[in-house]
Amino acid sequence: MYDGIGSCFFILICIPSIKIIIMSDYLWKIKANTNWGKVLKGMEVDVVVRNNTGKPTTDAIRDALEAKYNIKIAGGMPSSTFDFQKG
Image 1 (cartoon, rainbow, N blue to C red):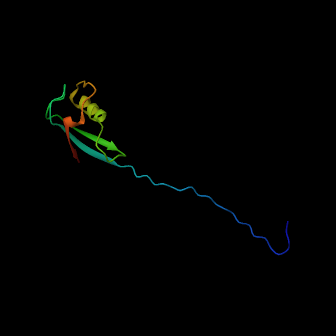
Image 2: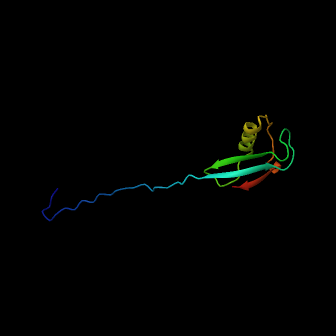
Image 3: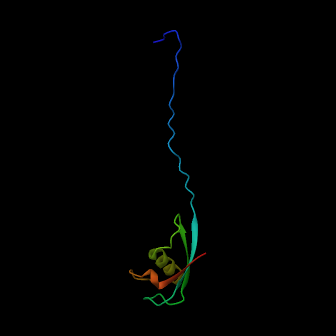
């Protein structure tokens, strides 16, 4: 209803907070420091970790070793088997 004095309309605009996510890749150089199953001391692989600044998982290391050296590695390999160097 218009009362002759004037009307003011307010429009509320809701903008959800926008988060900017920066995707980053980190290269890790992994070298076996001891023998473990088919993994021999001195074997080396490079592993890229995406969107995480932490060390690569043993699953990622196992996959890289299997691909590079054409071997099959059993589960349960401890991360202490390797030296990690962030490249």
